[in-house]
Length: 389
Image 1: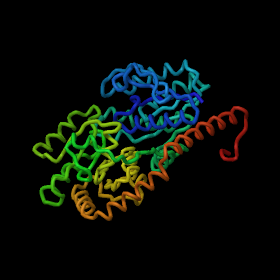
Image 2: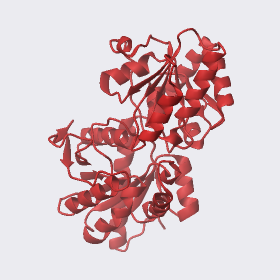
Image 3: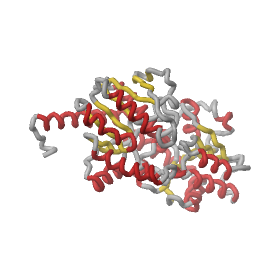
């Protein structure tokens, strides 16, 4: 099949779960023999890049502002896609998926799919108007495409209850593998197994301020090993004021390190040699950073939101969302129980390998494409399968 992926910023992924999802999904779709095009924005992906790991990359412009970047790029990409021989046009996230109406009307030969990654209107970077639009966009994401894919069971159940949408559940994936090298660690001021790791966009709903405050309190009360550090990997997403806030609250704290965006070997080393990974979000669909930490075999402390519980299951430790005291207690307890840390890490790796393989996810995605195309054909010819009767 000829498949177009629209709505992401681009590939290769620098930051952002959607971009990582698209990169890995596209790579594995190519390995399965499909022709895949990923639309990219020039401020994210080098516009000279035409191919990445067998994936065709098409760079098109956008109005690069906080509120217009995504929707304008999606519109331009959709217009381009109308004149391409795609079998499938697959939108990512609820904002871009509002434009699925265009190929539904003007390119009926192509199958139109959307992936419901998260309930974006909960994200605190948006103003009231943007949140209202995103709530409307969610409805369209669940009803406009010929099939909607939800990245968590909770979101699939929500789409059914709220909109009557029979979405397909296909989770995010992970495929990290620990490395022995530690060439980058000294440059970051880190030592093996002597730091807590968080990998996230620096936006308020990701909860990095809860973790920062908890770390400071544990350090002040002597409940952390000497010179134990907090490594914050990631940068803001049109939210520079939140990044500035985090750095201001961490002034004078030599053991809190802001490392910016990291990819490739550097990021792999950071995952491989961390003592603990923390996922403190207030809201998630299914966090790819969390899944990657699992695949690296890290012991994990996560907020007790449904997306984290679904991803991690019983392979980690939970704290009450937004509760700094709860987070402090779980961190202090786990750090001082090395046998528990090792056991949780092994459980997390086993769960990642058995449930969240990108190859399996790509095959399930192709099956959704094929089943939806078959259902469409049956409708055209007046045939109704038993499953859809």
